[in-house]
Amino acid sequence: MSRIVLVTGGGSGLGKAVAARFRAAEDTVFITGRDTHRLDRVAAELGVKAIPCDATDPRQVARLAGELGPDLDVLVNMAGGNTDLDGTERPGTRLEQLRGAWLANLEANLLSAVLTTEAVLDRLRPGGAIVNIGSIAAEHASTSYGAAKAALAAWTAGLSAEVGPKGLTANLISPGYHAETEFFRGQLSEERKVQLIEATHNGRAGQPADIAETTYFLASAGARHITGQTLNVNGGAHTTR
Ligand SMILES: NC(=O)c1ccc[n+]([C@@H]2O[C@H](COP(=O)([O-])OP(=O)(O)OC[C@H]3O[C@@H](n4cnc5c(N)ncnc54)[C@H](OP(=O)(O)O)[C@@H]3O)[C@@H](O)[C@H]2O)c1
Image 1 (cartoon, protein in one colour):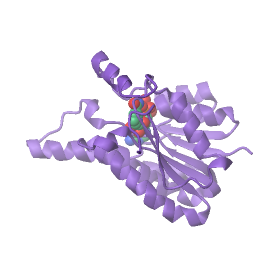
Image 2: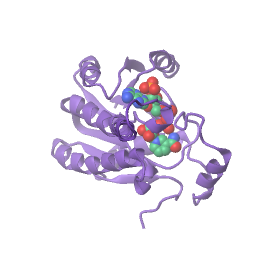
Image 3: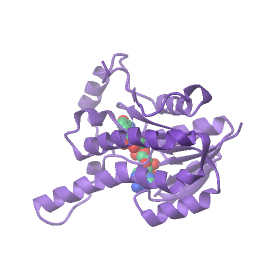
């Protein structure tokens, strides 16, 4: 059965791979992002539909919901990233700059998912799935990015309880280091990359397909009893036991 799928942040990296995976199954896929040129290019490449939307902006998210149509089966809240890597100059005192930096990561990684989910929740049909994307950084949440992803994981568990009675699942995938994305903004040193790979049990970086396949599984008929969970996709770099 063809489904309707929304992937926020679907214009690059992990989100693009997720969109391609659902499209390969002949689902109707919408991707969002702020860079409209890239979004249009990727949408044409994958055969999916582009809707420009900044997931942190309530007005744009409301407009996105209006453009989607009445039904949705799968929501993948992929939009996010570590805003500390964006190089944004923040005004004010040291504490004001700190506040701005924390708010940016909370908006990009937590509120983006909360706003999008709330905006489209009434469109999700029974049997549907919500997949949020966290991070291994949540396990060592010394940064605002890690703290935002930890909060996203906690919120996902509560969301599961809220949407379960409607026949929906809600889970969070927590990726470890994944290559072939724009996440690090070219700021990952070779030394750090080696460290991240050495921390895994299987001796490799994650690939976008690892997240795409896990997302596809969580939205499949075989995963209907998996809800409220954090799934670590990290080659063993962090284990749950
Ligand atoms: N790569 C890793 O190692 C890794 C590890 C753990 C978790 N993650 C998480 O995986 C997700 C995908 O990251 P990625 O690695 O694929 O990096 P990426 O290539 O930079 O992708 C991030 C995507 O999110 C979009 N985005 C960011 N902020 C947005 C906003 N406010 N509204 C709408 N779209 C927004 C970006 O598009 P625009 O710039 O056009 O908006 C971009 O397409 C992120 O949530 C990230 O935190 C990645």
